[in-house]
Length: 416
Ligand code: 5CA
Ligand code: ZN
Image (tube, rainbow, N blue to C red; front, side, top):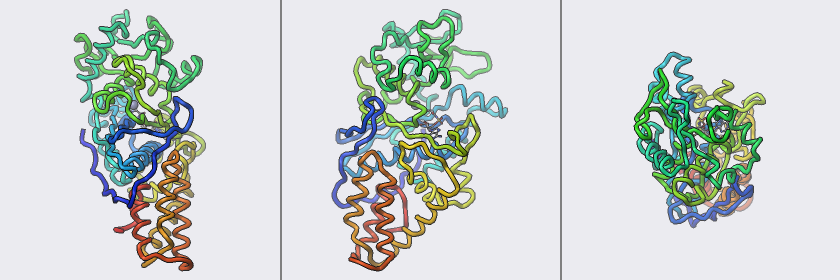
């Protein structure tokens, strides 16, 4: 699929430190240890209502991962999917009496525009579920051939992964069975379905149903792919097993990332699927998680349409830590707009407070589990000192801080 245009990325003097992130599977902050090319897979949108500020916050968190790795001297192979066929997309198209393909294409196009406006570095591979179907089918056939998957015996043609044959099951989320069952039922699973070997077996392929789109499937049975095998297959085909970071919002901890990992491990006979599973916390509005199903959404495109500077949206979302559930409020945006104005005035000065500690400090804060509020506080302090006109001055400082904020926080202040 077409990705989106890359923003310019200034090169900073020296190199940044090793990135540490919180890994859900180990339950602690761990150092990433990428090869020369770091590999990251971040779960993309299901394109029926893009891009709300929750989505944006999640992609901004992983954009920081990308930027910190690049600053540390790595190339980054970044992969993102688009779940352009799944139940919620078809349900929305049905509700609005719209062609699901038109809906998906329109929302994906809007997402690209929002990501471009927010200056998110684009993925090297941007892959839709539909275009991946032939590969997904091959993987499901492998699981069937190895006796790790089974066709349900009720004539539907639905295929499930037998998780009793998956020894690693549970090691990503580390949830107990009751918790798993709760989230599974809540997030698209079917624990009660008769004929399954285990209630927690996930669907790999949904046999053709009347009125639903379908494609040639495993062993010639028509239908469409399950959700978790989509991400496992796309990751395996692009960056392979053992990649550095699997990312998404915390609502994907279970079942989605657990099952993607289990599918990947079953298909390759190797572990782990990802070295670290990193989850961004939820953005809420008026005390509830912002979600399509609840309909309490604020859209990036709506704010842009009202003339809000995308850099202020970016700063507002980064002013909270990515692992803290937080609310979007008008005050948050106002504060970010003010901050952006202050920073822009400061970098427009002929000289400023010393830049070295800002560059070093922002690098250090972001490498420490993406502490964006800590990084922002350092730039605030620099801007205040610079605008006060007092203390030590350096002629190059405004340009260096401008580049630092651009390269590491992704906030463009001006042409530095
Ligand atoms: N297509 C799947 C992933 S393969 C999916 O979850 N799509 S989504 O459109 O529902 O969400 C896209 C991304 O935004 C996911 O990483 C999800 O975890 C994240 N997300 C959804 N709602 C929020 C929210 N309120 N706050 C933060 N992140 C969110
Ligand atoms: Zn996914």
